Amino acid sequence: MKKEKLHSIAPILSHIKKKKNNFKTPNGYFNTIDDVVITKLKAAATQHKDQDQIPKDYFDSIEDTVIAKIQHLKNTKKSKNTVFKYSIPIAIAASILLIFNIFNKTEALTFDSIATAEIDAWISNNLNEISPDQIATIYSDIELDYEDFSTQLTDEEVFDYIQKEGLENILIEE
Image 1 (cartoon, helix red, strand yellow):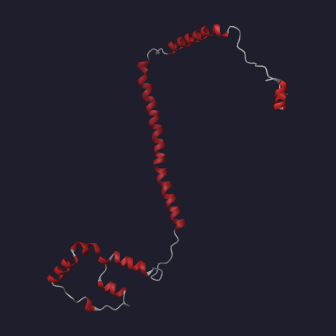
Image 2 (cartoon, rainbow, N blue to C red):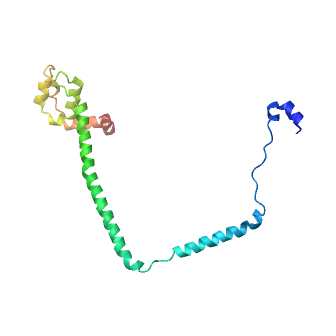
Image 3 (cartoon, rainbow, N blue to C red):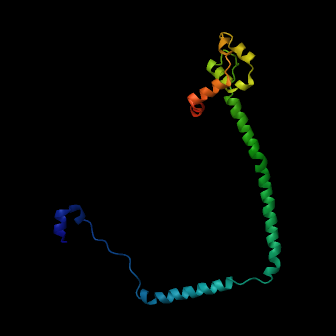
C-alpha cells in the first residue's frame, strides 16, 4: 500500500515508522544445530549412567536405615495422634456447652403457658398410659353421658355391621 493512500485512509498510522526486525539467527546456525543437540544428549546420558550406580554395601545397611526411619515416623505419629485424640473431643464438648448456655433461656413452665392443643396431643399420644380417672380430672368441665357407654353389642350385631359396611371400608376409615 502506498504511503499517500495510507495517509488518506489513516493519517495517524501513516506517521508510524516501520520497525526493523531485531531477531536474527546466527550464520550457519541450522548447519551446526544437530551436532550441538546430539553432543548434549550424549553428555546427559553419560551423567545418568554414573548416577545409576549402587554404592558398595548398600544392601547390607539399607535394613537398619529403613527401620530407623520407620521408628521415627511412628514416634511422630503417636505424639500427633495423642494430641488430636484428646483435644478434639474436649473442644467439641466445650462448644456444645457454650452453645447450650447461650441459647438456653428457660422460663417457668406452668399449665397456663401450655396450650390446650398441646395437652390434647400429649393425651392422644399417651392414651394407653393414662387411667380414666386422670382423664376425668383433666376434663372436669365436660359432663359425660354414661348411657352412650352402657350399650353392649351382641356378636350377631357386630357381624351384621361388618357385612353391611365391609371390612375394608372399616379398616380404611380408621
